[in-house]
Image (tube, rainbow, N blue to C red; front, side):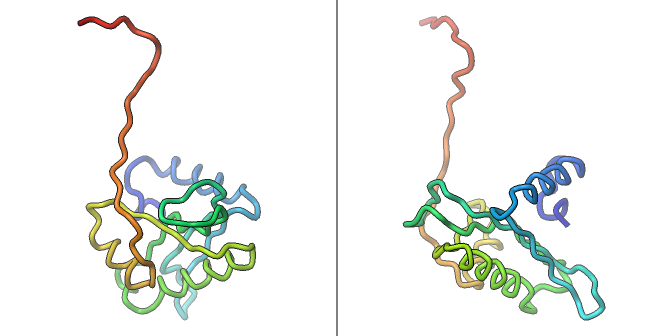
Length: 139
C-alpha cells in the first residue's frame, strides 16, 4: 500500500523507508485498518517531530507522514479511525498538536484533511538553490 500512496521510486525504496521508520523506536508508529474479514484496507504512518513544524506552536508534534485507504473502503470512517489512533498515540507521548501536510496541487488530500478535522494553517512554496562545489563566476 505504501507503493500506492507514494508511486514514485521502487518497491525496494518503499520497504527501506518503512524499515527505517519502524527503527525509530518510540518516535514512529504505523497503524493498519482491517476489515471484518481481517483484510488490510488502509494504513497510516506517523512520527513525533521535535523540530519546527509549519503552523504549529510546540516542538513535540505528532505528524501524519502518510495515510492510505483502499478506494473501495473510502468514506466509511477508516481514515478517521486511523487518525484517532495516531492522535491517542501522540497524546500518550506528550504531544498536544497533530499536524500533516500535502502538496498544493493535491486538492483531494486537502479535502480529506479538512474532513478529518485538520485546519489549514498556511500554504508554502519551498525553494532551493544548489551551491555544490565552488565554481568560477563569469559575468
